[in-house]
Image (tube, rainbow over all chains, first blue to last red; front, top):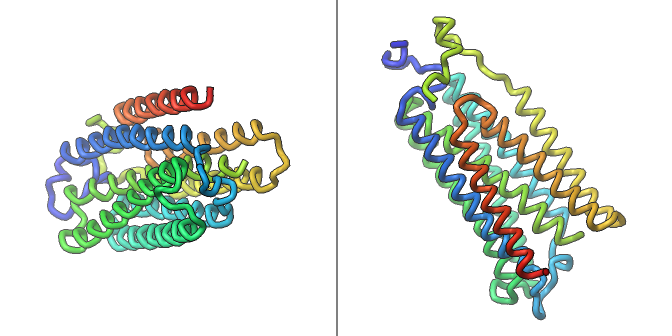
Length: 203
Length: 106
């Protein structure tokens, strides 16, 4: 298929059209395998330490389910909008793709705002990073996830700027695809955070 | 890995069979339903504790499998290495969590 070489004519799945693109996706998956282990260590530390509260608040006194539910829905919707961005990528619709990426970023920022508000509330309730082993492991785990959301927002934001400048090509397409995979991974980690940390903390 | 598009190339045309949004919207609705069940089970507060914990883990794992398979395209062809990466990572995570729980709660 020599159609790939014609300038302007993008192949059906532009993110997998070049060896470099395919390697980028493969390498990113191996990175996500390592990220899984990294979050696993934070989860295991949290589970081991969550009963060590000293004089600080206990999980069931601290967590507010409505807030967690809203954050969960925001992140879940943002994961769906990043699916739509990749579908627009496969249809070579640059404008619609950039639009869905922008919506994803906006929802990511809403999530971060809610998390900052939540942590601020906790600090006012005497739940600081150094209060207890529970608070340290809680902020490490949830804060590390929040850091990933922040990184994703910055990354996708820079990608939007790059695509505005360079257009949608076989070079930029794998970057969009990989950033969408990353964003889904953040949502997958959050599924376990709201289950293991927030919901099991209230059981 | 390289023959990802062989199906479309056999047709000898640039027309590629594009997947529609339906499957992804179904995964979204499924995720929402599982999430609501999980929150409702905890909010109701009068269920057996061990039952709720296993229910929560079950809801989370089903939801994550659906998202990995469809949203992250792991069900598509040419995803052997992604599966090895994630399953290998998950294997280490299960050992880490089991070890931490045994160590502290035994």
